[in-house]
Structures are given as structure tokens and as C-alpha cells.
Amino acid sequence: MSRTNLSRMSRRGLLAAGAGGALAAAVTAAPAAADAPPGKGRRVRTGFDRLAADGYAPLAGQRVGVVTNPTGITADARHLVDVMHADERVDLVAVFGPEHGFRGTAQAGGSEGRYDDPATGLPVYDTYLKSGQPLADVFTASGVDTVVFDIQDVGARFYTYIWTLYDCMAAAALAGKRFVVLDRPNPVTGRGALGPVLDRAFATFVGREPIAQAHGMTVAELARLFNAEFLAKPVPLETVAVSGWRRADFFDATGLPWVPPSPNMPTADTALVYSGTCLFEGTNLSEGRGTTRPFELLGAEGIDGRWAEAANAAGLPGVRFREAYFAPTFSKFQGKTVGGVQLMVHDREAFDPVRTGIALLVTARRVWSGFAWRPDNWIDKLTGSTRVRTLIDAGAGTDEVVGAWDADLAAFRTMRQEYLMYH
Image 1 (spheres, rainbow, N blue to C red):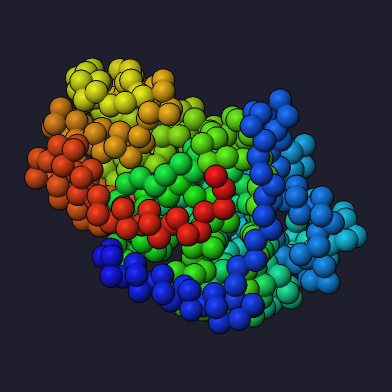
Image 2 (tube, rainbow, N blue to C red):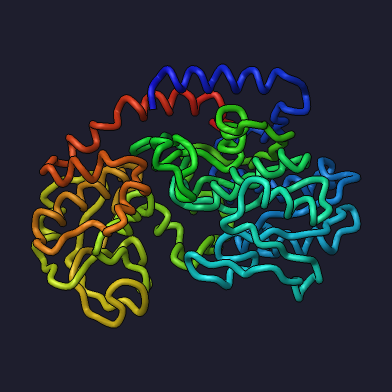
């Protein structure tokens, strides 16, 4: 992505924001965080908790639909749909389920379809793989005036919930609906963006627009960026900020309960490595699906301890690698014992997940003769271009691969700065 394109998009965003109050993103600001950590005078409250405490004022007089999944919970672990449905101050009329479904019963690449929720009786509409006018038609058929979004993200471009957000914003604009984003912390901090920036020629549901592989933003910040920079028709947008969260906070500093946002994201530790090790989905190695440590365990038949030795010799900051053997219960190598590595992050402040993922690809290719990319070049969709694959195939080292995206990443970081909501 060139600096010229970024400048053009920024001008378009400013024009859209200035076209009238209906297009500007209203922000319910977060009170400044105190210096004390959570549990010692500082409390992190999600966008939903702040919305409820304010009596749902932004939803007054509106027929409301919610895009959410099992992560849409309160601080005391009740689901926001159940809470809102029981509250006469909210006219909740519909729920919209993403990949894995509203109640989270579907595996990767699946959804729950259209049904009536047994707990509330509310109609649940399926948004998965819908976009544009077909998704706008779903919003129209549901009868809602305002679409609310509340899903926990994990900070990686290829995690599909942020593109559910994008598609729903675009569809709501087409359908003439308001859009409210209830924010949640980025569990791996919002300190900075890392990794390659998507080339639009490789746009898919694991990356619609040119953002960095590890974007370092919250969903509300992304919504503001999407609305101003990327959407052809901006949506009337309001965001409700988290309070008490600082950009340097990891998830365990929030005091909030962790709910797996998808079946293979069981812990916040998984999220810490995911933006790098998910790249192994684009190879013939297992990315640890079907184990209790997905994305922390990587391997294949025929790999031995030489990979862990090579990875440790790379001197990557904040992480060590253990020679590991495991037998996935599903996905690649189901029921077979494979060899590989387990990532063990010992200094998460120093750890760079994207650089680590690249170094693991480079070393795996060097020590294991069976290494191969998926035949569909899925790695190009994950990294956002052909560059990573072609450089590694040409024998490039980690520094050369990582350095190849410096200019694009610097330009994205500059654009991103305008939409950040927290310090």
C-alpha cells in the first residue's frame, strides 16, 4: 500500500466525517484510568457495562439488534442478550450470529444458521459469509433501527470477527440503520501495529482492507478507521469506550473474565501467539488444532528436535521453544503422532508474535525436507500478498522477510494514530 493511497483515503475520511453529523463517529469517551492496577483502585469496564450503567441512553426509542457471540458478557459473566432482553429500557428484537454462531456451537468455517433462541425467544439471524446487499436485506427483514456490535477480538487481521464488523457496518449503511460498537480491550495490548499490511488484491474474509497483520487496535477503534478510510458509504456510528484500560495492558490486567471467542482460542495466551503462528494454517504443518494448546503447538510427521534447536538459535526475544510431540484429535494429522515445537513465551513485553511466526516458517523450511505451502497458497491470504511466501522460497532469512514490509507498516501506523481512543 503506497503513501499516496493512504493520503487519498485519509482525505476521503475527513470529507466523510465533515459531510454532516449523521456520518461522524460519536464516541462515548472513557474516563481516564487511574494509576492503580485493577483490583487496587482501577476497574476495567467494557463498553456494554458502561452502556447499561448509563441506562442504555444511545438505544432509547430504537428497535435494537445485536451482533454478538459467547464473548458478549458482563463483568459477572451474564450474556448481554439475556440482560438486555430482561430489561424493559431496551427494545431488543433480534440477534445476529457470526462465524461459530451466537451461542458458539459451530467449529471453524461454520455457523448456527437461522433459528429462534430457546433462552429468549428472539430470532437469531446468520451473518456468516454474508455481506453487501444480502446482509443489508437481513437487517431490513429483522426490523431493527440500530445494530449493536459486541464481540471480543484477539488483535489479528485474519481473525474474522473484525471483518464481520466491517461487513455489518457496510450493510447497515446500505439498509439505513444506525450502528453502535461496544468496545472491549485488545487482549494482547494496543501498543503498536506489527507485520505486513494487506494488499487489496488479496482481500478475502480473513482480510478485507489494508491493515497490519497485528493491528494493535480495539474493535471500536477499528470501526472508526473503517468508517472514515474504507467504507464507500459511511454508517451513522457511535462507539462506547472501555474505561480503566490502558494500551499497555494485557488481558489478565483487566480483571475481566475470558470467554473463548472461538473453539480454538481457549485462553488469552493463545491470542498472544496467534497473530504469528496462525501462518502455519498456510502450510502442511499442524497449527495445533485438535490439541489443548492450539497455535502454541506446531508440527508434522517427520519433524524432530532439530527444529526446536534451530528456532532457539534464532535468538528471538521473549520466547523459547520446546521439542514437542503430540497427536491432534482433529484437523491436520488427526490421530497421528507428530513432532514439532511448543512456544513458551517468558517475556511477553519483548515478544514479537509476527517476527516469531516468520522465523518459525524460515527454520521449519530449512530443517524439514517435507515442508510445503498449502496448494491454494492460503499463506498469501493470511500475509496479504505473495511477498512472504516468495521471499522464504528464495531462501531469505527472518530479517529480510520482516524488513520487506517496513514502509507499508510505517504508513499504516501513521493512519491508525488518528483513530486511537486510549493512552
